[in-house]
Image 1: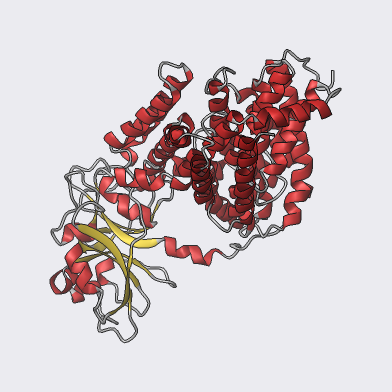
Image 2 (image 1 turned 180 degrees about the vertical axis):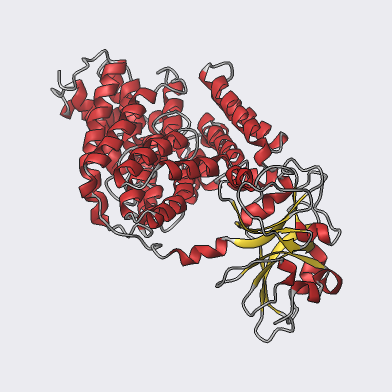
Length: 604
């Protein structure tokens, strides 16, 4: 073993110790490892910094922006809600619908985003259908992770594996190279969860009482504008179009409550609808053609029509809590005349108890009422010290540009098509799609930057030099030779299983990207020492890093559902050990069949 290898192994051991201890963030550890490799002369500065301009890092950043475009235009919410409706009332049907649908979404997005989106939907579904939340959340999280095995872009591990193969003359995988394996894994995962539901704990979950979710629904008033496309359409058509996102609780015409509020009754210009809506829906109203916030229009301060988002203009939405002994207690919104006295407009209200009706401006305020205020930034700053309010808080909402949903879908599809047909290099195709999402205003540039998980980008850029150093110093060849000597006599299927198992164990303490960077060079060198194509060995390694479900810490998605599902460490072991073994056998069998001309039968 030469000095360069000893230095590299010392740096690698220190990095692994820091990764495992979690005393420092993984992206910071990756940066420290990169700097150590440079300062010790193992890598040149150019080699050490090559990760920042690498294909995996660029694709990951671009996919985050593309996903943000789908989310900002309401596509992901609609898909999630549709899944919830299709799931029905039985546990088996819910699992059968949720798993393939979640996997399909994760194939072109980040599995954490999909898991986070589906979590509240399934919690509400479990509560409404009297199902155990723990029977739904683990299958969903599993499907989100398995969905990342459907395409090359959905997990950093596959991008890193592809980059390694390309740099070492092993060929480049196309976008759907691993799709046959991924489709098989999704099918096996769904069948396993359906047949083995008895392995899942039966617990309602921490949010069985969903009263705390009520804060997500505010009362606000919508005005049907002159020339609105909603004029003449029925209330039923309105409810169907918004699919519960805007829940109509009262209907006023000429300031008087309508007696005829049947679903078949037509809307008219000037009608005011009192609705319950989420913060995102309130922030999105200005993008709905033919609808306006009634309070804003009533006081002659129409929202911006120049296309600028409120977050970029002078106007803001904030929420204010009515203080105990406030001068506003018992007075109606119209009596207080917020615009004249405070320079703001009340556009929404949340009250913990009771069901509101009638005109919002005639509602008498109570202690603890939460008002949504709209106004100029300078005015809102002055309100922060007003004694009538207990506190002012940012209105946590993101507007959606649902009119651009078809455009966002088209951009995503075009990016995938360009990458799949290799008309453009994958990183250029997805970068072009990300830029198009911003230019077409499917997502604001501020939100696009916010959605990029810089930690993942920096971590990928930082761990790539570890793989380069392992190859450059000959460490990968050395370990591969040791493996080849001790694995003599093992069939090819056994060797593929060995690489999967090594990655499956290591990924419990490291990220899938770090695991792939460390083990993929060894898999490549092992294949070359045996005179075999490296592709199946590298793919099995990356699959082991991505599709191992032995513990809740192996995947961040499992951590998201740990408390809501009231799971224990043992729950994941009981479900995950047989499943991971089955996945390993399937991956090795499929890899041998696809790329080594192996027999179709697993053990033939």
